[in-house]
Image 1: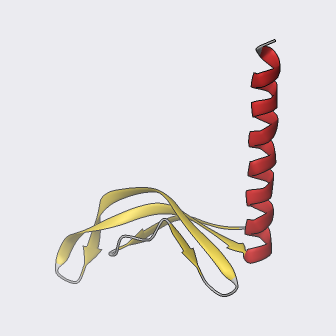
Image 2: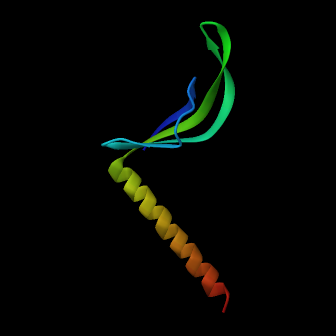
Image 3: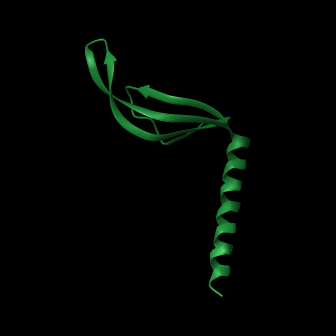
Length: 79
């Protein structure tokens, strides 16, 4: 995973963008003011992450396993 940190843009990003070789995630998207050629203009700032497709598949797999384990714990507590 590559963490691009806090990114600012004039255009609102997609939450998730998939290319042939990578997956990009924009999170915590908020409005902000940016300095443009004509003074201050509205824009967006967000945290931006990039994954290779294999990294993203592993991330999804791990999230699924964590969810399944949490459900098993909850179901086990009901006895």
